[in-house]
Length: 262
Image: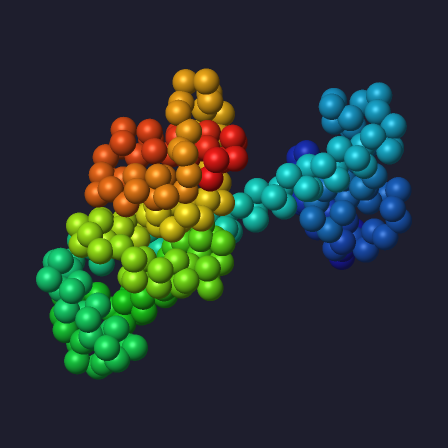
């Protein structure tokens, strides 16, 4: 009979006692103080030390702040994950392909807008799967968009940039200057590219969107007599190439603008 079941009179573990009570058919809560998982029913709850003495409103506020911080942490982690993945992909591709390989595949992609099956097979033999290559290409395209937008922003917009380039092609005759500007624009370095844009703007007579050094003391710098005098200096091959010469011309330009002589 069920009433005769015993485990030798020894002290039972809570889960064993609960099992025994179920066999005995005990259903009274007072007689069975244990839950199905063996934990005690109505076990007293102890308020954490950091919440003692705080009102319910303060506790809720603390909880909401914690929830917000956890959410922001998760968001930051999710944003960094793609960057980390792309970095690993670029490192892998860069460790496998030679500069000559990059040149060949880049040329093929630019000519056709994609790589063909033969290219993917060649890359597969080098240890680079189609998935890796496609992710690499997407990352490169995203970087190009960001880089191009930074150049457009420095010029004041896409149309302004096109007009600036058109002006340069028609008015700058020194091929070494053109080569230097083209090198900076295609360097992949945003700071260099922006400097090239500002260089062109100053040569054309259009003040850059952000003029550095606007606090130059006009008492120590001679202003230009007129715009033609300034244009003569920016047309010099040293402008944009020699740092000291360029800074001197820019300083005179800023003082001249302040005094209204150009």
